[in-house]
Length: 355
Ligand SMILES: Cc1cc2nc3c(=O)[nH]c(=O)nc-3n(C[C@H](O)[C@H](O)[C@H](O)COP(=O)(O)O)c2cc1C
Image 1 (cartoon, rainbow, N blue to C red):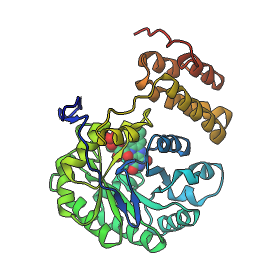
Image 2: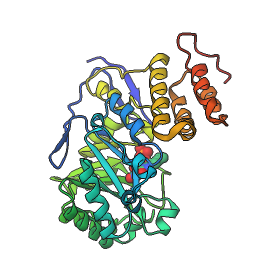
Image 3: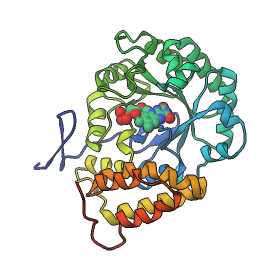
């Protein structure tokens, strides 16, 4: 079948015009038809953005990581973090923390609040988290991580999943801690693992090790494994699934500023050209995002949150540099909405680019 080629960063291509059979992703009893899902993204995978990703075709999303203690303390922050809706399901609530009892109590609360999955973060490479023995710290102490998984599983009446990295040290190619943590987590009752195929030391730099993901899936043939790392385009999402055999692909940086990523992936898998939102479609989504952010975070923080997203939305605009510079230049909340109107005009022609 003739078809145009979509290149990608790994030098491989996906043929438009060729259908790819995608198997649903299963997490416990939950079946997710499109196995390409929105990853947990601190500062980004909040309720307003998740809803836009759902409209853009995402069938499963994760919240930003939430500190167990903060989840247990009431208040505004807790209300904002825990915000969700029926249109935003099935949804994983991600917890970070270091003490089995507190993690279990926070997980129990997420279940009572109606989160469909509880996800445990043993992957975060941020120094503050590592210093406080949270997130990626556990890639050095797999037994302590497994104790948390065991306590959380006992407190939950729904699937518990685990996010981890391939190792702590970049030079560690034996991945001993990974295997101990992965085996231990499944033995403790975890329903799935999401594996970020980089070391904690590498943070987000360098290429994700997809060969490692293939080895993990080969080892855990009958378990659910979601791969993460370098899923930057829809073509790469399909490539990751095909090349490694994992059950699902988690989209992180690839979905920032592109909530249409999921339907684009489905288009590509169906053999079609991926949907390309025109400026009017971008305007509609960005305005909805702005309004919802202001509702959730208020008239001062809402526009600040939007500034960060606006910089990411720039990538799909015909003049990305102009958009980036515009959002970076915002100093006051009242500058945000007029800037959106200027950069994404209702019907006028696209503003002239200066790059
Ligand atoms: C801005 C940002 C925030 C992130 N926040 C989280 C988080 O809260 N929890 C988590 O498990 N991973 C988090 N991650 C990691 C991603 O979920 C993903 O595993 C990683 O970025 C690799 O995927 P990528 O190379 O396709 O971006 C974050 C990544 C980025 C870039």
